[in-house]
Length: 429
Image (tube, rainbow, N blue to C red; front, top):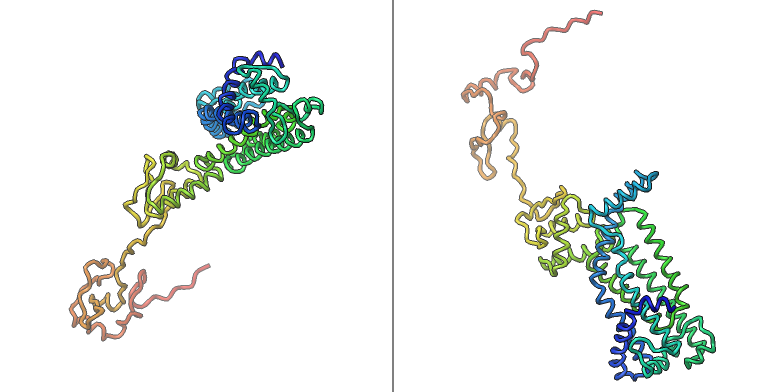
């Protein structure tokens, strides 16, 4: 323990100073020796640390999504060079370099807050053993040893004996119950955080070993928290429970407002965005413009949920622009999406076809109007095939009509010779 304390001594003093400053504020409200004053000081320390780590959290999100995007390429490299581990590693590093992805970026928030965790652990251990540390003097040490959270001292552990717990002015039952409840809550919050990541914010179209690893971590991390939690002081359990709850809420916000492409969360998000845009006709926030801009830039590479979103806008007579804005489409009758699908919008005017004429009308070259009784000359827009080929006087036409055999049945059909037909001779074998 002394070795760890020496390694993290550079951070122990700042951590103890921050706790003392928060203790002054909460001590004036709840009392200097109460568990609320010291417990809320630890909670405030966690919140302050996590606010400072938000930029790293953003990098973690980007790195995780980049790794999910690269999983198909990584799988191809593993299959291609499965017998050559060195070449496989070289190709992996080349892929990371070309895509600008760092696998360690997803671990940055955990690595960044590890020094604070060990510093807080050392401070609470000094309170348990009665040693001053950092800016915590004898007066603050005595006050911290009197502080209890639901009957459990800040420095007490689940594995402490009854004699050590009695020195801190508490009972072993209270310490065991409080620490057990906090360990269960800490493990449950960690499990729920990982589970909502796997069920809602993972691209379901890509099945890779990375997803199997994340699924395994969903069960491994809670077990690790439960095993190591019995050796943590109550104050450290407060720290980890607070940071787990913060992580869960932060991840829920990201999933709701900036989901991973291809995930169930993106389908729900685009449905909400589509309903709002079609109702109000505009984009609300800058983050939404960024997402719409990325969807438009994909073109034919859009996934199923993104195509549905674009088609829904087209049906409403709207068009997504490359800058992320939405404007009214000039052509609302029939809109064609960029993926090649045709979306029907408002009712398009139907093309009027010319009225079909009877055979007698085509022969006489006149069309009887709908409202009158006198025939009119047929429209010049008729096809030439519909006009009589040999124009004859009306009298000649009448005389020809009176002649026998001039009916339609005696007319020579196309491809048939006029006049009496020569009987066919029997075929010669």
